[in-house]
Image 1 (tube, rainbow, N blue to C red):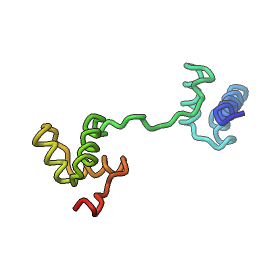
Image 2 (image 1 turned 90 degrees about the horizontal axis):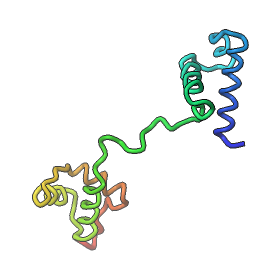
Image 3 (image 1 turned 30 degrees about the vertical axis):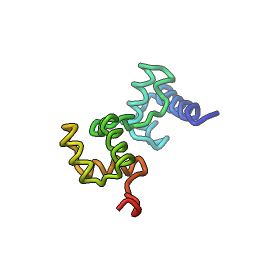
Length: 123
C-alpha cells in the first residue's frame, strides 16, 4: 500500500466515523484533526469520490513572478558564450533586446543554472 492509498483509507475512516455517529466536533476531537480539514475532505469526497482525498501539493508548478524561459535562456547563453558579469548581462539585455531585468534577477537565473560565479581565468 502506497502513501496515497494510506491517506485515502484514513480519511475515509474519519468520514465514515462522522457519518455513523453524527457529530463532526467529536469526530475531529477523537482523530485530532481540524474541522476545516474535515469539511474540506468531505467536500472533495462528495465532488470527486476517492480521487478527491488524495493529498495534493499546495504550491503551483509555475510561479507567477518567475522569469520567462526565453529570457532565462538568453541570460545563460550570454554567460556561457561571453562570460559577462551580472551588470553587463543586465545592460546588454536592456540595450539590445529591450528586456528590463535587474542584476539580482540575472543572479537568481545564473544561480539556478549553476553559473553564479565567473571563473578567475576569464578576468
